[in-house]
Length: 299
Image (cartoon, rainbow, N blue to C red; front, side, top):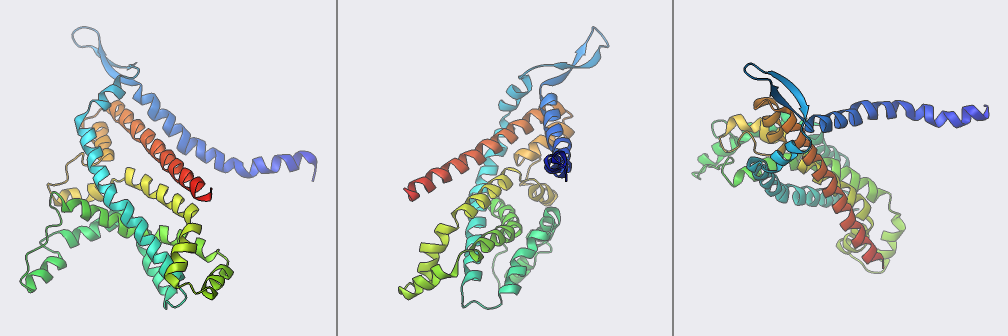
């Protein structure tokens, strides 16, 4: 192989991924930013002509002044307070249990825990929606059988837990697999030495496994935070079943409302760019916090 072919081989192999990244990631982002800086204006007296004009940051100002957008952000944060800790806590618990030496049925348990991740979000929301809906809910029927009051899954407070439950059910499996794979890569000699020193299994989990899981925990935590910011399918699918969920219940629903219901794609683009920027900043902030904590613990 000639020197030129050796040098060109890496670029040729990465070219398809680069092309896909440019056309399906960078170009849509650039187009959204371009739309966010424009708006439709009527020019001319009488029956003027609607033309697209450059308005600078006007759409961003309107988005930041939108009270409905900030209310949707508050609801999303309340949802995240429930969803993120529950997802990470259950994923870590399942990974540690599956890695324990005396736990049986590990293969079946891994498949059972991971299987909900393969179910699309809309289908999962419909499945859980039938469980939540009072008219067809088996939970409500069981409670009535025992003379107990029916559960209200669509209340002003319980709706956050209902939607978070769907997200947790679908995302725990992926995070569990990442953490469990990391645990399997840890040398078993560390565990054997700890057992010889008299450590119980729970002490090994707290003192050895969890500290060594920090990089994987950071990655899965960031993924879960991003998933929180991108929540859409669960509330949008449940919305026809209850009046508790409004058309702009979370930020992405507000973007859809602006762009396709109010027919202002320029304001919707500005709101989506702001949300994307917040996602990047929150992810970088979370990574920074974890990095500082790791540096302090290492020091």
